[in-house]
Image (cartoon, rainbow, N blue to C red; front, side, top):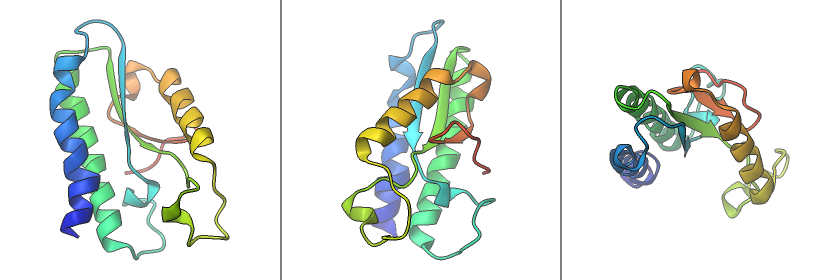
Length: 135
């Protein structure tokens, strides 16, 4: 569990710690953090995966908190959590009946979501099709 939290929650928190100094003060800037729908407490209908779910929920909270902090000085900054869908990787090989997208398609989808975001979207959680994901 500690290893999963280190990668999925502490890692993004350490990166987000340095993001404000890299963002412009007045221009639009967008920061997307990859999390996962399984980190949604409101969307958890299956249980299981305690460490992974909890680490992604923690990452979501970190994103939400960073968005609030960053918006205090950078009104046009957008910081969001993103669910890329199930991407075809070695991690998802054990899910043969689950629809997957290629890493390239997932990246294109996420970039399209980021391009369409507005300042009012900051601090929210979106999936690969720009649909809000419940916390």
